Image 1 (cartoon, rainbow, N blue to C red):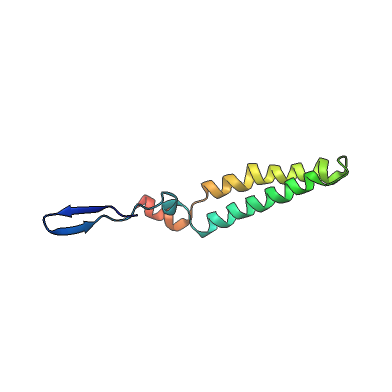
Image 2 (image 1 turned 90 degrees about the vertical axis):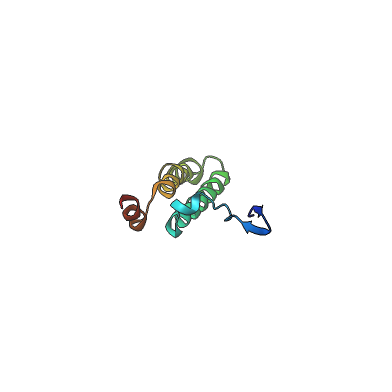
Length: 90
């Protein structure tokens, strides 16, 4: 939403407020984030598979969840494209 400012007979509109993530995140960051969400859903699904002492519940799902939370989500947050790096240094 933009804010309306009245000045002596004219109505001026301020620019809409942009999301702070738009500056830093590009398509690759959103893809990595979606991959992390998908991996965590798969990990929790495998964790719920019966019997509780199966290899999927005890070994595979914790490894998938660890990869999602310790690798993919931080990669989605900290990844910066080369274009943004060049703009930042200039």
